[in-house]
Length: 168
Ligand SMILES: Cc1cc2nc3c(=O)[nH]c(=O)nc-3n(C[C@H](O)[C@H](O)[C@H](O)COP(=O)(O)O)c2cc1C
Image (cartoon, rainbow, N blue to C red):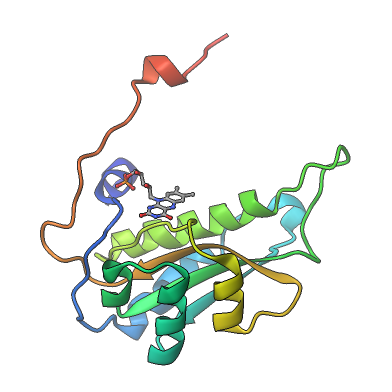
């Protein structure tokens, strides 16, 4: 699939089938995500793949949405706060790094016909508790992972290029 087609195929999927996600697909997606670049190559991240019903229920308490409950898998992208690159003016690139690996993961999942939705608006303390995260692991993004229900798409609105591109 060419890159434009792949990017255009991805959308925030807010409706999932209970259909099983094949392990081979998860392995492929993780193989892609592993190649994500990071500042100073610190790779300050972990990816939690949650299939366990009890842990999923606890995660859904951190972001209560029926479509999140529907998904057979929830993925949490965690940043390692003891290995993040900080610029010499103090700018922290942890969120940037974790966003990149999440992007790679999500686009690979899209290529495999799976649905995802970036989620940031969760209760961080509840996610930490659900995953029993140590002090140095901070959850930054999560996504459901599963086969999309038909009709889960929403209208796509984007700014025109003229509004966002500055050529000097
Ligand atoms: C960093 C980030 C955080 C987001 N957090 C949430 C969220 O908490 N809940 C949600 O329903 N959608 C969330 N979204 C999805 C956006 O609303 C969505 O990407 C945007 O409206 C564009 O729609 P599209 O993904 O279908 O192209 C998030 C997206 C990004 C990139």
